[in-house]
Image (tube, rainbow, N blue to C red; front, side):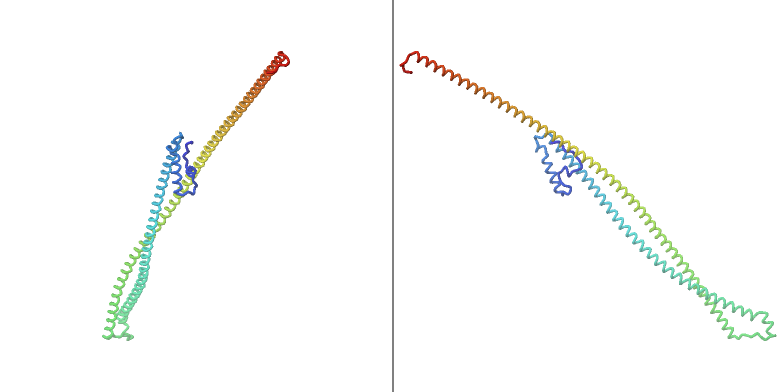
Amino acid sequence: MAPCEVTDDYYMILEITQNATLQEVKKSYRRLALALHPDRNPDKPDATASFQCWIRIRYRKSAQEESEKRQAEATKTEQKRAAEEKVKKQREQAASLESLRHLEGHKSNYDSKIFELNRVIRNLAADLKRLQEEEDEELRKERERNGWWAYVTSPIFGTQVQETEEQKKQREVGRLQRLHTKNIKEKELIRQEADLNNLKDRLQDVNRKIAAVKKKDEEAKEQERLRNEQEAKRRAEAQARERHAKWEAESARWKQEAATRAAKQAREAQEAREAQERLRRAQAAKEAREAQEAQEAQEAQQREQKARAARKAAQAARNMSRLQDDSLYELSADSKGPGKEKI
């Protein structure tokens, strides 16, 4: 038995189909390993080489299984890492969206408060302006009453009217009330302006935070886009490498199959030549046997003919001897004379 060639076509080597189960593969391997063991084939000189071929197949298959196992573990680890990274990104996105909604709510609240404070400040400013105008009008009237023109024209036209104490008191009370109201509104205006500035600072801080969150989201999206592009590029390169490796494996398998077919054809041709040689030898032996048998038959026939001729010659000799004896007897009888009895 010729040593088997170690190829990647284990289905052909193990004599199984490509849809065979793992149990069928193990069973066929053990069966053939036992069948090819040197202890089972003591009369075959190439049994050891054939069995070593199966050992190499086992080692190569074990290495291939270990490589596939490591690759599967690496793929599983990568998938787990990708899943964890995806969950982490989802949580970060959810937290970012929640923070953005919270900041947007603060911004909306600050905008409404700022709008209301601006309205209050405008009303206070309008009230202060009205109070200032009333005070200015009162001062103008006071100057007109106490001016030189009124003093000069009053004796002539009799237009000067003296204020009573009650009017002066009411005018003073009104002035004090306007002054008190003005002070209160000025303080309220200062307080509202301070609150407005505080709200504007808070709004500016919220806007900065919103801009930072949006910038972070944009950076995260940009990083995700770049990562996706790199991942797509890596997958494309991996697919290209896989296609190249698959093509190389297919080419190697085709070459191995071609070599296997060529070896098989060579073995079949050798077996055919050996069969033809055996047939020729058998035919030659048969022809030799037939020729020998024919020669032996011819020799036997010749011997038979010679024996027959010898027998005929012996018979002829016997017949001749008998005739001679008869002739001698007759001659002897004649010589004795008539009347004598024949003995």
